[in-house]
Image (tube, rainbow, N blue to C red; front, side, top):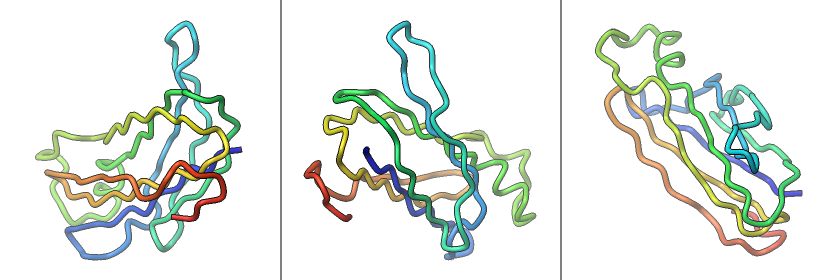
Length: 123
């Protein structure tokens, strides 16, 4: 089984994005998206989920940023035009760990991949 993990940081407060909702969807052969998991980040803004994948599966991480910022009350949600961050990934190794850290604000985000596609790698 693969592990999909993330650490989401709130660049407005300089803190972890505790409680932010993240969904993972897999593209099926007919093009439809199937929800694999829907979780809320822990108090450190982290998720780590085991998923049953096949080599080359395409997945999307949906990071619900507007929902998160609405809950914090720190910003005016009417100015946010990116309500959901969508990260598309192709996962070559169905037994690897894929760690995708994210820094977000109401007006921007940054993502990167942390790790290698070697089995048992901990990013």
